[in-house]
Image (cartoon, rainbow, N blue to C red):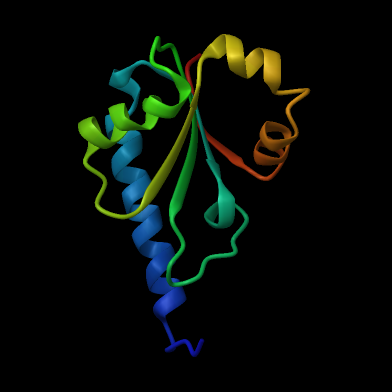
Length: 114
């Protein structure tokens, strides 16, 4: 797939701008931690790269419904993939779940409550 000069850098700027916007809006929603994961975190941005966020938040929602909360409240302007764990799940799985281990090791923590 041919790339026009500047498209990847433009996409990187769009992803960063959306992340900055979200970081202003996410903390009041009860977020405990946010990690940027995926291609943006590993600097492997392409013209169709989505913003991928791993979020730790207290919630009673079933795992598969948790991203809906963020889509409804934040109204993303680009494609964003939200993966949401409760604090207990995150603590329990962070050292044993291969998916979560890989995501954390290849991520950038961008927010954590003190």
